[in-house]
Amino acid sequence: MSVLKKAFRKLKINATSLQLEQMQAEIQSLQETIREYKELQKQLEKQIKELTITVLRNEKRNVNNHEKYSKKIGQLIKQCDKMYPSVMEDIQQKEYEYNCSLPPELYEQELKDFYKRKNGKDVNFENPVTLSEKITWMKLNDSTELKSLLADKYRVRKWVEEKIGSQYLIPLLGTWEKFDDIDFDLLPEKFVLKCNHGSGMNVIVNDKKDFDRSTARRKINKWMNTNYAFTAGLEMHYKNIKPVILAESFLATGDQLRDYKFLCFGGKVEYVWVDSDRHTNYTRAIFDREWNVQPFRLQFPETPITPEKPEKLDEMIRIAETLSAGFSFVRVDLYYINQTVYFGEMTFTSENGSGEFSPPEYDKILGDKIKL
Image 1: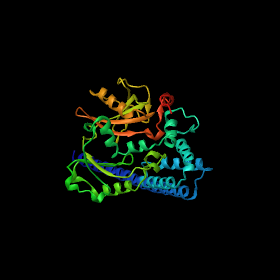
Image 2: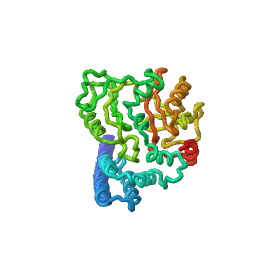
Image 3: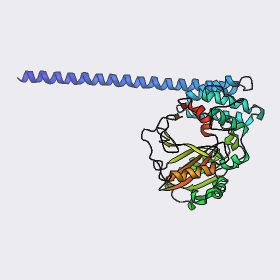
């Protein structure tokens, strides 16, 4: 019996040793795979950077080779976006520098190339029919001083107050021309910093104790030295806005903050959409003015859980139509928080004229509602 026990124990030890050796071999193989993957990543990033340099330095854009250049830039953006943010940033900076140096007589050609790169087809400048085409046409032919005023997130406040009353404005905590002039001791624990002259220029401060001031300074200083009209797509009504830094009251967290975007044609609300999970899994719900879900998508997938109709929808429609009166097309953005409506902004070039419709025929259906 003892001999059998010893034999069994020895067999067990041998089996354990064999398993350990197999595990060690698998770990070694996995480590080697990881090393190979990292090396491949380095090689790919190097190739993309070399291609970026080739395109940005050697391709001189002019009226004859715009399309060729735009295709290469489009390919680079697809390769670099998200995977290589540093390369992407370099591409965007080069594009910005190019657009700033562009003479006005080439604006139309640049808009045509931008449209082709984004939408995969030519824009009809002579007879625009779709929403995307008409927005692109208006960038060049309808960038008025009034649009510049209303796209200015600071100056628009006075206009909104005169139109609908100051009760719809988010409380303003201060304005500055330089970041280093801001006295953060005077600001509350929660607030929002934004620049007035573009889109997406926001820093949300949930807790002042955790606020990374140096990162915010770097971002805002870059924004303050950027003319948003030349970042992409030549949204020319931003060109003459004088940059200012604003601090506004903190209204709600991302989950609680509902942003309702009213598409107004000739001063009438036709559609409204609500975006969800903007920083994780971006989705969008689109309704008509009666809050019926619409059979088309624009740029993002449909929101899986349909947002409830806001109790003050009629008031929000009235506000949007008051503010949009006199414009062939504008998107009026409003917030609805704790039974209170707040003005967000006026957007004249929604989706930068490059939003993808599904099904595609709705680009024309909405375009038919714009009278140029």
